[in-house]
Length: 247
Ligand SMILES: *Cc1c(COP(=O)(O)O)cnc(C)c1O
Image (cartoon, rainbow, N blue to C red):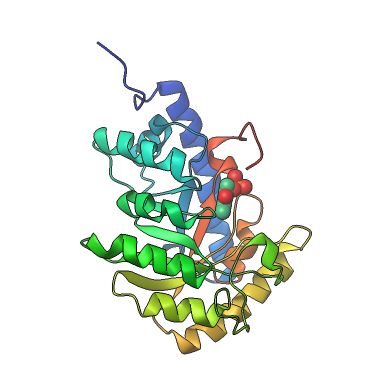
């Protein structure tokens, strides 16, 4: 018998179960502290650099949502996982080049990193043949530094202003404007970053009331993100272990 790359080893399964228990406890505590219902927060397991077998194991432990940040890695992994009979909700969370849009829409259910009108248009074209619209979160720049990616709140810049990007997504039948996403900028206290993000999200929902998702918080700062309204936390290393390279 051949062993597929999606075969789960019992020792790894136990390791992941232990990581999951710790992360679950952190999320539950943070919800209690914030006076929020645990059901308001979806945990996305960020499986980048880890094999398809880890996705299968996490799904077996009850994790429904998986995140990846590079198309080259994610496309093959999603195919392997699907071949193993496992069908998680896939979130694409990394910087996305327009020429990868066609590939990403084949497996992703949600894209968290829409940060330009040009990318929104590329995704809309690529997603035209999908049965269901692709859920799109707009990545926002918290510190306003355009070099690091993210649409700019309060800017009318035609390609990367948050308003124009939102209009491009909202006007595309193949896309559904689901909400906002952000990463705390390097050197910022998470408290300051996520309280700023909460302000941006509140103003955004006044214009786009259906865009209720807020993707924020990773292994190191998920408590702060939940305090400031995150509906999706993206957890990699605290769940799966430290990745060999910083990515
Ligand atoms: C890798 C990654 C994460 C997860 O980071 P951890 O610190 O390992 O939890 C979250 N969001 C994005 C955009 C990522 O690229």
